[in-house]
Amino acid sequence: MKGKRIIAGILLAGILAVTLTGCKNTDSSKKETEKPVITLGSDSYPPYNYLNEDGVPTGIDVELATEAFKRMGYQVEVVQINWEKKKELVESGEIDCIMGCFSMEGRLDDYRWAGPYIASRQVVAVNENSDIYKLSDLEGKNLAVQSTTKPEGIFLNRTDERIPKLGNLISLGHRELIYTFLGKGYVDAVAAHEESIVQYMKDYDASFRILEEPLMITGIGVAFAKDDDRGICEQMGQTLEEMRQDGTSLKIIEKYLDDPRKYLEVDDLGY
Image 1 (cartoon, rainbow, N blue to C red):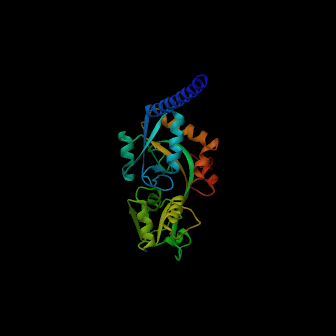
Image 2: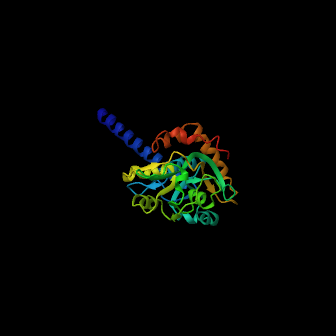
Image 3: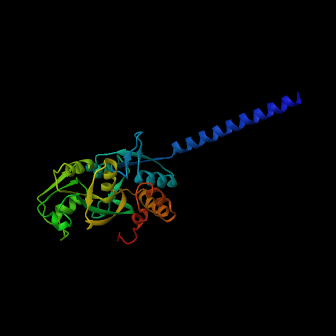
């Protein structure tokens, strides 16, 4: 009987341990779902934001945002938006912020910004057999960009004396289309973030040549509405900087990009 009591006691202890563990997990999950939700708007822009094989948002910005907002006491919901309507969506409150490899350059007065948290090169890419090697070689050529992006403004406004007059500037609504146009020879060149071009070449086994001369080096930030006075933007900026300093950002970026340290060189960008 004594042996049976001991065995019964061990079984009871095991059951209690499993039950208590289950309670802890349930409590933890409950606390997570009780956190206020921040809605982050972005379009598909690998490797910063895209859907994985299970249809779940992933990428550099998704991971950075998830960690940053977790530290701030929020949970984040990433939603796909029409990139051309991003300003309208954040100002109406339909989304809380915009985060999708979003350049701060030339937009400082349009939004309240957290960042920069990443440095990115805006570049021009051509087919490997192209005779375009410098920005000046784009004179009279046809170039494609994603609409409402920084390269579109650079070639439309031509405030940089290095930018020649194009034959045609073609603005397309979706990132993938500009590369399709280049691959099929509908345009002579495309302009975009260097990381986006490199990612597309990996994903689709494409062979483009990136010009050595960049259009610009810009800071990437998180945009909130100009009149958003909740203090979340400022807290987000501080948290992203803490993540840059403690190595968290580096660990995330190196999953997606080669030479990850260069993307964290934001101190001299002048913002």
